Image (cartoon, rainbow, N blue to C red; front, side):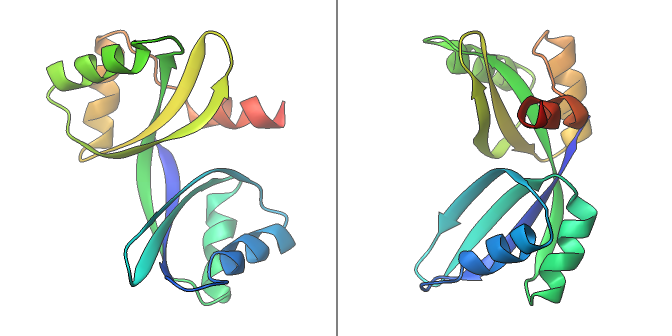
Amino acid sequence: MTIQQLSLFLENKPGQLKVPCRALGDAGINIFALSLADTQQFGILRLLVSDWEKAKAVLEAAGCVVNISEVVAVDVPDRPGGLADALEIIEQAGLDIAYMYPFNNRAGEKAVLLFRFEDPEAAVQALQAAGLPVVPSNELFELLEG
């Protein structure tokens, strides 16, 4: 129930973000979610895409260095305190969050957050045991393709 995420290091200068986005667009690969963090010298672009294997090949051909990692998509109640409640479950399970970012918001009942855990498979088991819904990649992408 983990999802493959692409991570790219980008030089922190104008125009660098356009390179992978253009390469993916030209290849017909849809970006479903992204996160960009920066320092003074470089940025880390994290992507969920419609076809991660093809995207990796396309991006490498465009000169990008691509790392693949696993993230976990979690349904979090979309209400005040919903995230805090989910984080309490995560803390009680002894899970360490490396980072997180939103996937999308299904306005009303649930928001989907992507979490990077040290041990994604153990995190999935712990979250499911605690009753926090984990969203498989096929369901996650159907939300946007629907």
